[in-house]
Length: 58
Image 1: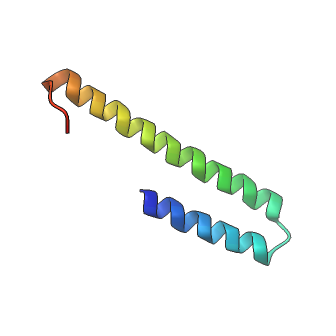
Image 2: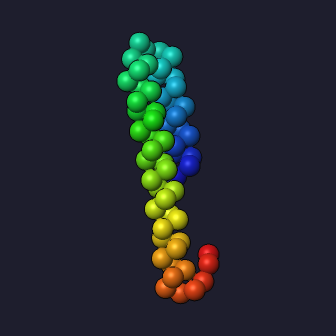
């Protein structure tokens, strides 16, 4: 997932350089960051659920 986020950031930064739509693209960049953080939180929750059910850590 982290690789996809980094590729997305690189693509959006390139688009900022190429167009005058920097403000809109910056919003997309922030949205991508928020989605990445949601994924991190979902992973953490899943790990806690597994631990609560099995008592084992990954």
